Length: 472
Ligand SMILES: [Fe+2]
Ligand SMILES: [Fe+2]
Image 1 (tube, rainbow, N blue to C red):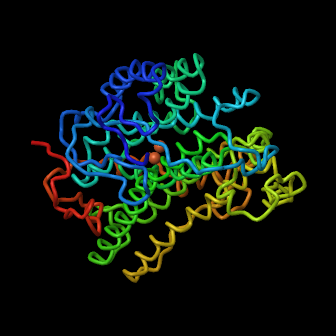
Image 2: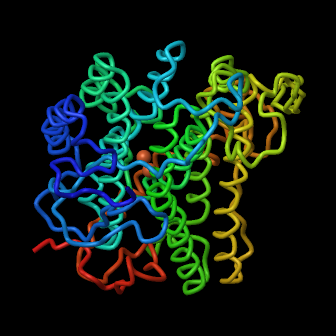
Image 3: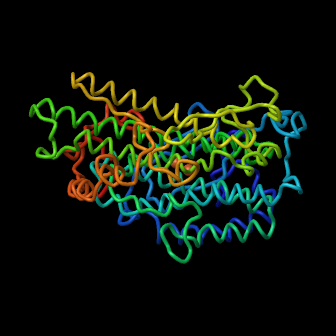
């Protein structure tokens, strides 16, 4: 069961051959997916052979195999984590009941919406990043970009499988719509705001994979707790793939920081722009931007939807099963952000409607770990500078803090102060133009753009100077 059947048109470990109706629906969807991929997938490299990993099993150990593939020939398929025998629902009103193997009728609409919203982000990110290959800083980075892109495509497959297998005609319509919406399109945009912005350059892309893909990790992890077992198993395997996306972001920004420090040391200056680097102040502004827009993705501090998803047993907390409490939370409280005049404080609120805030807290703690590692790099070069996460209220568009202006250190400030300072805190047009000016493709084997250090090691034991993408 852990093995994946590659003799089929759609590789899978869900016994697709035994379900003719579903097989037919997905085989009809497949060419439309390829059409979408050719139109909206990575621009300019569809015919090139890339050294990519493909899932061959869903075992956590050794699940992937690496080889050269042209992206349109990538074997996208349906892979679910192994079922846990006797799994029960771990939280909410149905606590302790056997996990659902089919959609519980009363939660059908809500569940479909959850799956569609998650599914929509997957193709959206491919669309946002489609032009980046043309300005890659190295073949190694180009390969990582494409790896992420094909896997986001596979995540779309994962959600479409759930829709087609469990939601009948409505599900098939949603599957079609997932291929019809377009990131940034005024008439048919992607569902979530952050997924309608173009990813303009590689610094933004690395920030996206660190901060925004990490939101994905937390959403998937809470859906992996779901009482709807097929969703849980799908998300568990997606998390295995997602780990690489986060790795690309964390090591990628770490390499930018490293290169900046090298240039600072070499030329004894903070102003590394003169030497083609990205100064730490600019890196900080990009962190401020991407972190704050990613915080918005968790939604409002107080949310009845979040409470309902939990009570219904559809979406749990991060690491729900490891928590030692009653897993119902009817009488529990949780500390949420509160505005007290000029001050931002916290207050105890009922725990159920505060679940977005709790997930955001888990996310924030996780984000800080990367910052600590980047600061280690800076320290190693004996530079007295620290990168920081801005205050959670900074530059928010959703939730309580969207009503006020907040400085990175957490003070509620006037509009006038905000206007005077915002260019110190967020990327300015000049920053964006400068970063854009660095975006020149470097495609010689083993070479790297001047603004980013080479990685510590290559992919799958290959050397750093390996031909990760065959461009010739
Ligand atoms: Fe994904
Ligand atoms: Fe991802």
